[in-house]
Amino acid sequence: MKEAYLEAISLIERLHRRFLDVVKSELDRLGVDDINNVQSLILFNIGDEDLTVGELTNRGYYLGTNVTYNLKKLVEYGYVEQERSARDRRSVRIHLSEKGKDLCNKMGEIYQTHAQALTEAKFTPEQLAQINDGLKSLERFWSHVLNYGSAGSGQSNRAA
Image (cartoon, rainbow, N blue to C red; front, side, top):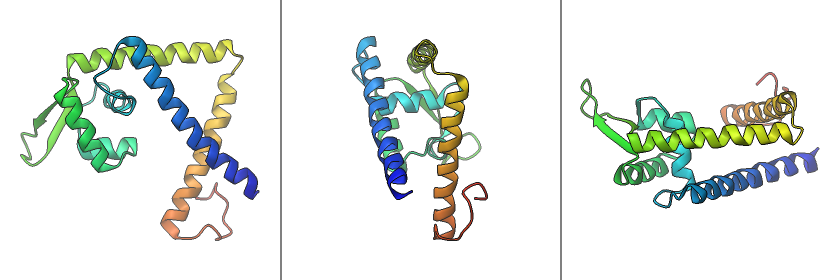
């Protein structure tokens, strides 16, 4: 079990890096050179919503300092607009500019193309659902470890 667990951890890390490489390649193909792959993922996660930085951090599991830096760059390059909340002047709300919406839409089209290519490569929705279920179970297990401080409680990851 330990070997399979370590392999899963390694695969998750490699897949994340590979996905960032794919996103970078797609940005290069689109001629986007003013933001990076992580920043484009932040744009995609903002989408059509109006959020606070805290909401974005919680949604995307980004580190707060990274979000702040990346949002500063996205504002600087005109992809994101920010406004002080009318209700709480300490709070800043963010949303995509037209430039940000355009890139977000292009990224959505790219993901649709990838999904179609997966189908053509004989991946089924059921296979992806099974992978997703396994990853969600692992996430629940790790959350349990974080919340209760021990993996050796004898409980299954389904109960977490």
